[in-house]
Length: 174
Image (cartoon, rainbow, N blue to C red; front, side):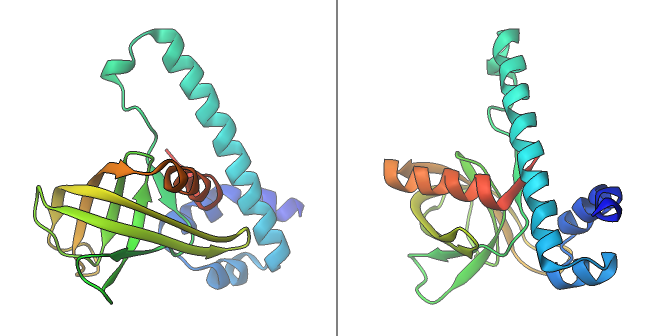
C-alpha cells in the first residue's frame, strides 16, 4: 500500500478530471480494496479539513462574507431525476446542502424544479428529493452537455439527512 500512498494526489486529480474507477485502478495497478481504502482516506482527510475550516471561520466572526459551505464534487456517478420531465435524467457534478450543479437537464434561470437525487453505493442506496431554483446556466460544457446551477429552496428534514449522507460518503470538497 506504500506505493498507493505516493499516488493519492494524482488519484485525486484523476477523480476530479472524471477518470473512472477501473481506469484509475489499472493506471496505478491497485486492487478494488486498495482503491476503496484510498477513497476512504481522502474522505476522512476532507471531513477533518472541513471541520477545521468551519472552526476557523466561526472564530473569525466574518461568516457573512464567506461561502457558507464548501463545494463538493461527486467522485461516483450520481443520477438526478426531474419531476417536470419524467424519464429524463441528469448527472450531479457538485453538491452542497444548499445547492447542486447538474449536467444534462435543460432549464431557465429562475425556473423551479423538483429533483430526486439517487445514488447506489457501497453504503447502500441514497435518495433525496427537494425543490430547487435555477440560478445560472451554461449551454454547453466541454462535452457539449447542458449544465445548470440550482439553489435548494425546499427540502424535508429526512431528505436533508440523506443529502448530507450522500455528500459525506460520495464527495470530495474544496
